[in-house]
Length: 70
Image (cartoon, rainbow, N blue to C red):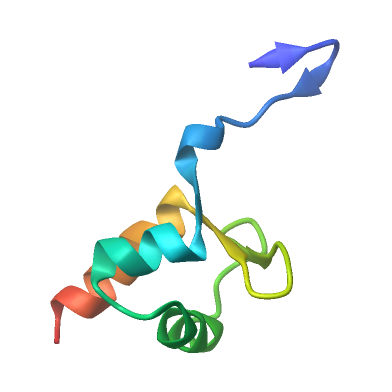
């Protein structure tokens, strides 16, 4: 979607670390530790605060795949 010539992102496809951790039944700390080893692109995973990270829909899919193998 464009607004005044600027591409707008769909925030329904962006998740904070606590949401992803809950979905995967993990602690946020463990989730972040694992995510940092997965070489996500900066469009998939980034720091959003002192203890909060943002995950794209693609990153969540990759995490679901990784933890479904265990």
